Length: 265
Image (cartoon, rainbow, N blue to C red):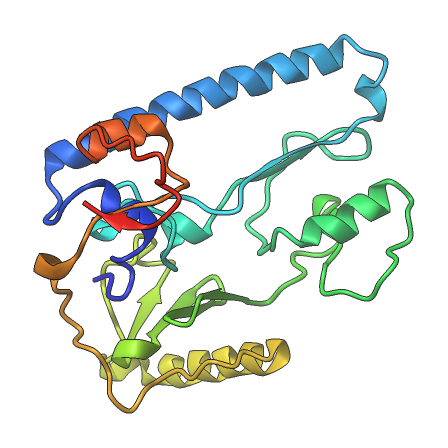
């Protein structure tokens, strides 16, 4: 259920097919990293609270992506499923209401306009960033009606919160999900006769986003690759971004001094 998403760098951390033991091991490491990060964030917050800057500082906690950690048979971030696209965004500080949450769409670049507003700084250039402050104060429900989620030239998605369309151009493949009924994106409704109006609507929505952003890549190709992944030919790649402990654990202890050059295991 995750075509064209199996070749990312993180997917090389375990062979195919995935097993329950592999995913359990990865989750243990992931939870350990989260615990470590939480502790360090706590140290920073405590230091801030003791300082003279505590009443004049806005704390922003967010991420640029999530991780699959076994969802859809994937491990990493390089896909357009919700586990990778939905990230936390927490703001705290003067002028920000406490104990309040919102399901409104945001992009990371919306922080630009938001921070400028809090700092009373005029934005120096015209940009696509949207100020989120009105959402925090419940003045408006959202600043984006939908979001466009592209990855390189091989994955596209668009979502309005209820419906989500995936497009995999290199294999001419599409998926349609009702996120309200199916938040984990497990039931493809693309060919369901009852939902063809949503296929048309979401396709038009994607084209609107692509036109606005100048997306140069086609959504289909004349000679598509096979939709069935060939796991037998997938080569696990060691690259310069992987630290030594990962090379030791997942790549048989290789410690190549030239590991910045992509090589296969």
